[in-house]
Image 1 (tube, rainbow, N blue to C red):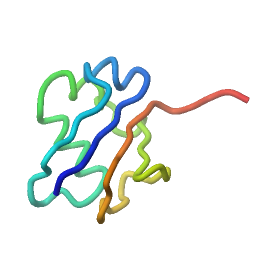
Image 2: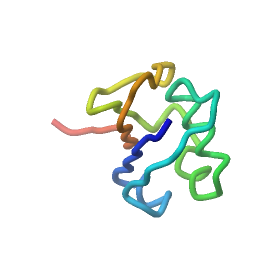
Image 3: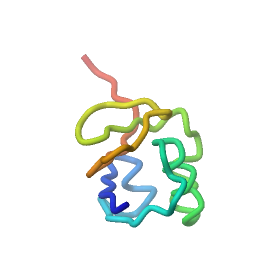
Image 4: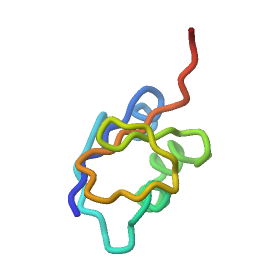
Length: 85
């Protein structure tokens, strides 16, 4: 499965790129699976996702939980928690 991954704010800074398209290996079924796979791709990803519970995700522009299945996703975005009023 080919998937576009977009990184925002400090996640982008830590990963070192705004986006990439990856070919996912078999067995990557959920957002959390993807995060754990990304962490194994290098120290920049390990640093960006060091606290798996902090980084938020959106699949095709819809906010999702870590246990959400990737399904037929075309794009996933990762970003830090948002604050403000």
